[in-house]
Structures are given as structure tokens and as C-alpha cells.
Amino acid sequence: MLTLPAPAKLNLILRILGRRPDGYHELQTLFQILDYGDSLEFSLLDDGSIRVDAGTLDVPEQDNLVYRAALLLRQNMQWQNKSLPGADIRLSKKLPHGGGIGGGSSDAATTLLGLNYLWQCHLSIDTLAELGRQLGADIPVFVRGHTAWAEGVGEKLTPLCTEKRHYLVLAPGCQVSTAKIFSDSRLTRDSDAITLAALREGQLNETPLSSKKLEAFSGNDCQELVESLYPEVRDAREWLQQFAPAQLTGTGGCVFAAFETEQAARSALVRLPRKWQGFVAAGVQTSPTHQQLAKLTSSN
Image 1 (tube, rainbow, N blue to C red):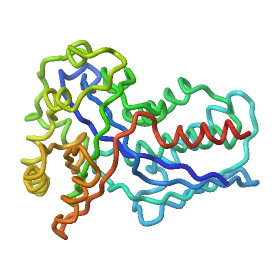
Image 2: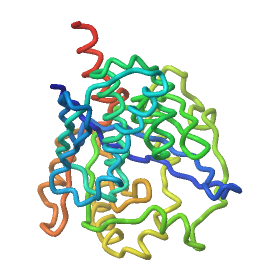
Image 3: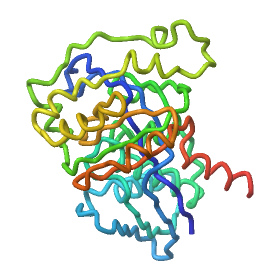
Image 4: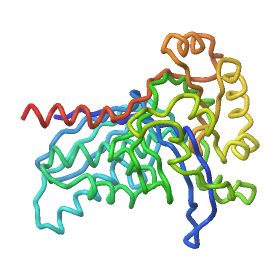
């Protein structure tokens, strides 16, 4: 048996530069990995089957990214004529569905990483990231496991170190459809590109990006459209704005604000209206999933 976390992420910056001929969008974003998320429990099965218990998550099995990731990994290994046992996977959800904090993508990435270890596939991170990319644009950042600057459709990743901050994340209770947002004609698609050099200006490469620098470049091109379609997202952000600058993450429903200390974030959380859910998490440079797998590998 193996139990691994599937951490959340925030998009501290999200700029949409244009639409590509294939329908996808060119974007720039800064993925911040958090120390909070879902959990997956893996057990081997002798009959070769793949079973997923997703608890209260109401998603058909064929659409469940955990199941699809396990199946894709198995199919990839079959090309190598490697016989594999089955897997029973139990998913414990903390992250809201459609929240823009990477719940499904992170679950899929942890499935690839966990079964690669448990099935002894010995696939490289590059190979696992490519498998993940076939299922979703956000999955590679979780497979690689580092807070990172991303370009292209989100697959061109450069690890970045950010100054440690604590985040209060609010879920206003609505599921935002990424497809709906990206297909809307009102979406901003002509933002100016920025560069890593601009982000790092005045700082040494090994120095964490400062909070002031992050706030200077922060923003989300999807926020205005999401708030017009889902007023409850706007209401949550405006409430959070009284404590610290707040913004939307990804294309989901969650909004967040950064605080210098955990205590400051929790002081705001205790005042949260009951109609919303929220959690406090710290930004980390390396995914908790990778940290735990590194401990397992070193102890074997």
C-alpha cells in the first residue's frame, strides 16, 4: 500500500497572449505549488484490474482523470511487453471540483508518479510528464513537482523559487467550466508577453522572487470574464480584498490572497462567511508528492 498527497496550485500570474491555430491558447503563468491538497491511496491487485474509489466525487469512471492516468500508464507499459499487476486507488478529496486549483490534474499526476513507483515502471519524469500532457495541460507541472514559470499552453516549464508566503484560498461554491471560459469571445487574448528577465530584474537568479515583485506582475486575464459569468466569484474576491490583494486562480472558481504569516491568513479565515469554504496553505518550491517519494526511494 502507498499513500501520497496531490497538492493544490495557484496561478499567481496568468496572461493569455493569443489563440493558436489548433484552438489552444498561448499563455504565460506562474504556478505556485501549495502544501495542501487531496490524498490518494494505492494498493496492488492480483487480477490486473484498475479500480478507482473517488468517494463523493460524482464523475463517470471514463472521465475520471485518476482512472485515465492509470490506464494510460498501463497502456504505455504494454508497448514494452511488461506485465503489470492491477491497482485499487482510493481518492480522498479536499480540493473543490472546478476550483482552478488543479485538483483533478494533481490527482492524475500523483497517480502517474505513484503507480510508476509501485509498479516499478522506472519511467523518467520527462516520460511521465509527456503522458500527463496527453490528459491535461496542467498535469506536467505536478508531475515535475516544482513551482514554475510556464509558457506555451503551460507545458514549457522553468522552475522558480518564490519568497515563502501563506495563502488564504476561498471556494465560493460554483464550478467554473474551463472550456466555457476559453471559448467565450469576450476573453482577453492579447496581453503583452513578459519575460523571466523582467520578473527577475534587480534580483540574483538564486534569490527567491520577492512578494513585491510578484504583486507588481500579478493578475489573471480570465478574472473579469469569470466574475461576469459567476457573480459569486466576484463577491468572494471582494470580501477577501479587505485583508490583502485578492485575485482569481486559473480558470476556476477559487480566489486567493497572500499573507506574510500563517497567523495573518488564519485570522482572516476565522471571519469567513459560512456560505463559503476556505483553507490556508503555504507556498512550497517542491511538491509534497515528490518529497514523500524521495523519502521512500532513499529508504529502500
